[in-house]
Image (cartoon, rainbow, N blue to C red):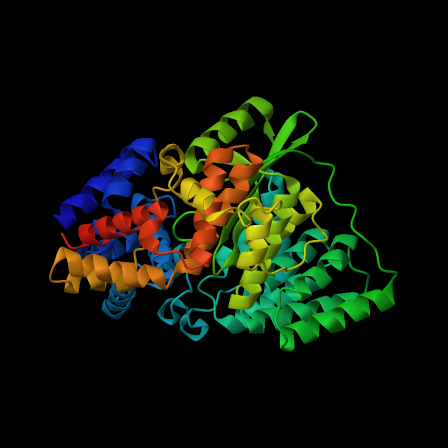
Length: 520
């Protein structure tokens, strides 16, 4: 069954690519693919035979690696086993001579593309690679500048140059990556200077320290760009105390001693609208800032996630208005987006920065481009506790100061609950704990009791989900749903029994369904 499923997916990708039919089918079968050791090992063998990243096997493995990464973040089953099987299959292929250095570069690139750590077994030992005949004539600056010219000629930006280099380095030892980062930071070019900032947000501590040393060496010869001087203090605030933050302090002082402090002018893009999705059950929220530049439209895409901060962020290339409008329409359908204000955007981003800082996660490198495009240079990490979030959702304290009878009516408003249903169909728990409760329960009553007890320990998490959505609905003038969400969150914070909050009954029912499906 698993091998047939794998073959069907590969055949469809080969003939039709990542079309809507495949994406729909993949959504239905991805759990089966991830749970099969035969699929993991078989797909690894097919990927080892691929000629490039566009091969169907590579595309499918990248999709599954991305699902596995999300699975690890969300405590889903199968993810760790799938990754372990792929790694073991690669190691077995290396031992048998079926997987060589060029294959390792492909596997490492796929892991890096899926935002997964590259396994040590995938790192190429340079002492085992034959030395090229022209090695002594190799000029890293010339090589890097050639990459940049090609990317820029194709309409790419500094971010695309960074991505090309970042992927190229995926299978390189950390020491070589650090050497390259240092060299990039010393090149007198605004493109590579921005690449150096991206590397501060994406590399290991060794790479980060090498980048800082390179920028310091660069300062011995010239001044830094205004944008870099503006970004460095911001980036410093995204690190906790330690060697990297201390190194950034030295760079900032050195840059200011070299020239007068300057403020980047930002971009000439005009923000037309900001839309955001409802926060899903895993705490992820997508945001899109729609901007105009002459007759073109540029989109700033941001994904924030509880426990991770700014998880992903990038700018889309400028597109004609009609093409952009189609993209935006598709996006609204895909993420169920509603409009939000610029002030709410700032609150969401500053809260996400604080969340990332607290949990040791730096913002995605592309967030720098988004900050510049949206002129958000004054963003600072600002934690948003539950009470502050409640005040944001209920600034006039209508819910907080309401009589108990009114709160009860709003919490149990059937029409509002029906209207909220399309927004809350992803609100459930799918963790090892909930799966264990269902698997070990002897009766339906004992299972429900166990789930209710577990959800009672998650009051703050679900109150935050409700309030994040309530803030959006309030701005969208959806008063009825706003009242129900805010009142339900207030009830969670005040200790109201979960069974007297219909939204939590829905969470419980969906949690039971999700856990039960995994057993069959």
